[in-house]
Image 1: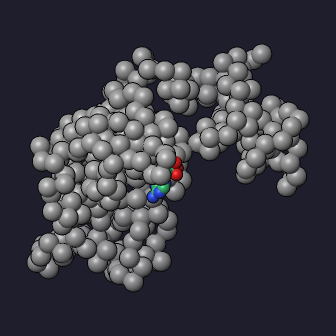
Image 2: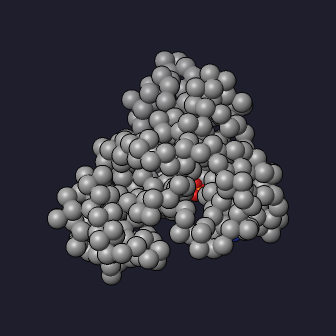
Length: 312
Ligand SMILES: Nc1ncnc2c1ncn2[C@@H]1O[C@H](COP(=O)(O)OP(=O)(O)OP(=O)(O)O)[C@@H](O)[C@H]1O
């Protein structure tokens, strides 16, 4: 069990995480969702003390994490990040066996564990164990990254957008694999994601963050039926009918005159993608381009209005 008690992290004059309290039960998966810069990663990294809190306490199975030795935090807690962070000059097997080796597992036990994990992730051990990371596809590298985080059978696994770079088909497969592992080993998992659909699919509980604050922490069904604020409702929208409608229409249907900062979206991108872009990048509007030329903008307000009344 992880008990996060009134935790804050201040950088300069900015509250990256502000007075967050929540409890993650053993064997449960908690998904932390929120827009870019809302404090998700900072919150998660305070669990294994990659980030030191400015105030508050985190207890892991009843023990203050400041009393846990570094090796226990780093080796006892699995950690998987987007972009996987594999060691480029080590083979797949060596990468996966990194922590078991540090823990002094003998060769046979390491070998068996590597093969077990490769099989679990549907990678034929004979074909994959001696490959180098550059000889793998992005999706395979990502799965090896998660396998490495699981290698020493951690009770606790921290995952920061581990499936972010995967295409939708591989991503769905990786999500199923994770659920399977979670059920099989009763691993407690904290997963940071931008994607509310992913949080709903995987989370026993979802923590919704905005501007460093925890807006709601509840099971998916409660978040859906009883969102704590309009903001949670908007984040939730990605799964519902109005947003599915948005996903069927292109940006050029809603483009208007005017300027907007930042990277443009294509006029052929869906309205749903444009809305996601405004939300995740924290912009009120995004430029729209056609054949490399900016032809106007779409605003978040217009997108939300359109989502509410798609046929207006
Ligand atoms: N080391 C740091 N020094 C100063 N500010 C930081 C540092 N790390 C994070 N921040 C700031 O704290 C806020 C929260 O960052 P954090 O990475 O936790 O957000 P996030 O929700 O994980 O965002 P994203 O989804 O974009 O990764 C941001 O405004 C960020 O700029």
